[in-house]
Amino acid sequence: MAAGLENLSERDKAVLRSIFDPTATIAQVVDDGDRFEEDDDEPSNDAQKESSKFCAEGVQLAEAGKFEEALQVLTKGIEVAPGRAAAYNDRAQLLRLMNRDDDAMADLDKALQLTEGRKGRARALALCQRGVLLRKRDEGDSARASFTEAAKLGSGFAKKQVVEMNPYAALCNQMLSQVMRGETEIKL
Image (tube, rainbow, N blue to C red; front, side, top):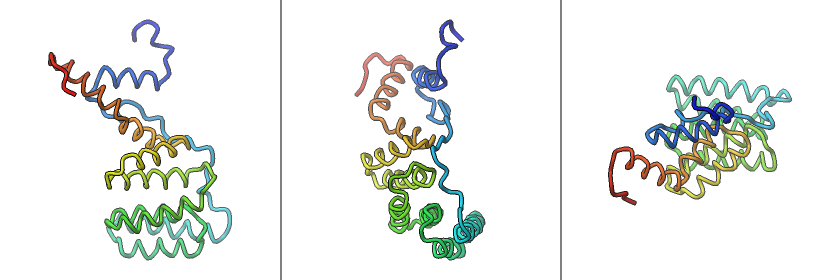
């Protein structure tokens, strides 16, 4: 590495990589991982533990392509512990897979209501899923707001989305790509 660059943080190095390689995806540039202040997904009572077991079973069923069965089991996970935000996140993920986006959004809204004022994993995951749905609906500003809050809570995925959705970064990458290809006139 060039002199003076060895003291740069991984994030600074990633920014430089993105500048000098405009074709790199965000995932190739940096993966900070998740760094949540709180891990509020840990079940703390019997009902939450039972909910967690139902949700784990529901996820396995979903992975096996048994969506309707998975939905029934995940719903049981919510019924035994209706205050457990992670259960709503799990069911929302399945509902997204089933193309039931409005139902997924309702579950995410409930998860966000349950985690209001908290700074943990469950809230960040609900915000990320919400951001994905909003982005799918072409509601970029709202999606960016969800990802921004999730990034502040420690979500590595959300941080990547915020960078990817930054219109100035996209414009810079476009211009830099044109320069690298030797185009003499920059098209905006």
